[in-house]
Length: 472
Image (cartoon, rainbow, N blue to C red; front, side, top):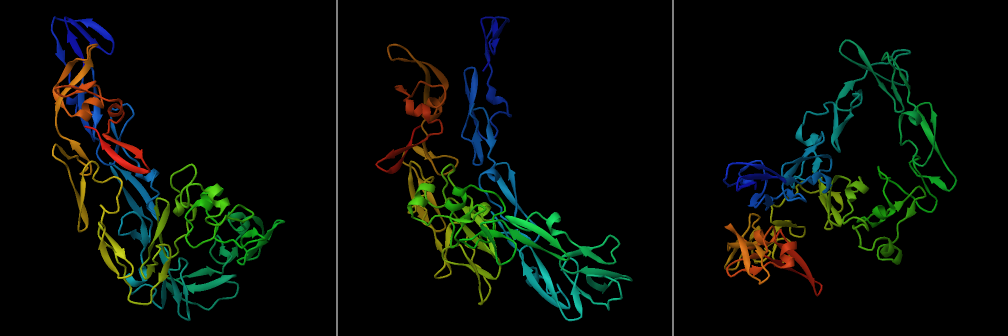
């Protein structure tokens, strides 16, 4: 608020002479302030309160800024996370579609959705795509998505490959380890050692005609697939596509796998052992420096035949069509019965024993952020909060706040008397959480705790249990 008083206009510490008058400027009349929240005017300034879900209040209290969920959730497996105003969306990679939770992308079974795919052959679904297994006399196209009639190979034509008929011409389909020459008439060797970065993991690559071989350094031995050099004392497979710390690898919720770390393939300590507790003091799925380890990033292939969704301290697999998840939510197994997958609406949970959707009792499960300061009452697929007399639910419908408004006093004199009240009635939380020293009539001095809790909620640990105190 800017003030003109007794002929002097003052703004930001600069004063000029004006005609003898005074006026008040209400910054909250500016529609661009506190977007996504509520503006509270005060003498010489303003404060933003009550940011909407998906927004955070800035440290100076002047703006409600959008939360970037994409940077903290690790959502949108098999797709790209796109942040939006107060929310986010998943854009799926080609060959994938949104899951029922809309937080990850699952494979599209092209073979079952289009019966005309792979004519003259058999369609086989693959993650994000499909491939054709052609009948005798036909070969797959270069992209593997349809079948071409074979042609008799002419002398010298399509060397190291197969010649197939085209529209008035021919095409060469190269054998594994070869690629098409610039003129398209024959196939030349692929130098895997120079053209790929992962031909020999932890080893030396030696190219050969149509193939290559790996040799390992001392202390390492070759894996069965001939592509990975691993520790002699263990057999490692499926290396992560990114470098991670030992704690991120070994403390992650591993499911049924047995992870190992480093070039030497050193097995991680056994769950519950002293070495594991020393390395992972917070337990499985929780790191020493971060609250949660994103298993979907640390182990990209942790959910074969499905998509990985990260959870706090764990993960779960959302299975592709034709597969069903086990009771632990970690393994997708092929089903030989009628293909179906139960997707429960919000507020219900799938019962794997009965294949039904059971109501979630949010009140019994004591979810930490519902019905703060009120009473939780469960209902089918949802719940509601009931507040005591004198309080009402806020915009989130999860917090009971005092809805009584009273005088907000900005000073308390040496005799303990409240002075300089703001003319607009305010909630106690609005008053004590901003510029007020006392509230109400008769006035009640604002406590230090109320000043430290401008968002109205404080968490107090008391005899190993959390209680919620709402100050308004």
